[in-house]
Length: 151
Image (cartoon, rainbow, N blue to C red; front, side, top):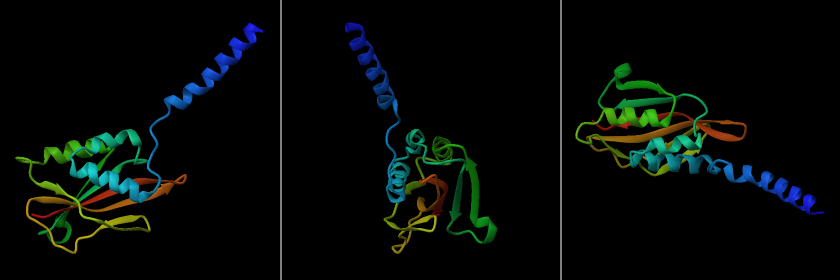
């Protein structure tokens, strides 16, 4: 009887270990994911989000030059992780400029979340303009981050 009790206790313990080892829960809605990404962007800490697997593949970064025209107004780069995006954005800074700023989230529809730019933009500031996403297996994944450079 003692062996059966110990065996049952060991089996129950073994079954409970994977529950403790699971990754932290991921935000449920795209709005929650975008808000978390926006806050990390402004805090210059995008790399911390890699553990949450917010992207399902490569992330496209578009920087739109507010003074540029035509094709020269857009700079496009691809990254495997948000940590790489953060390192690249920091490498572009000089004396911590351009600063980073987010605006209120306007809406998320048809794979794009946009931010409210009704108030204008400032010089030496890199704004989060929009975030594109896809839904795979019922979970939203970030595909593109569009930034606006307020030269």
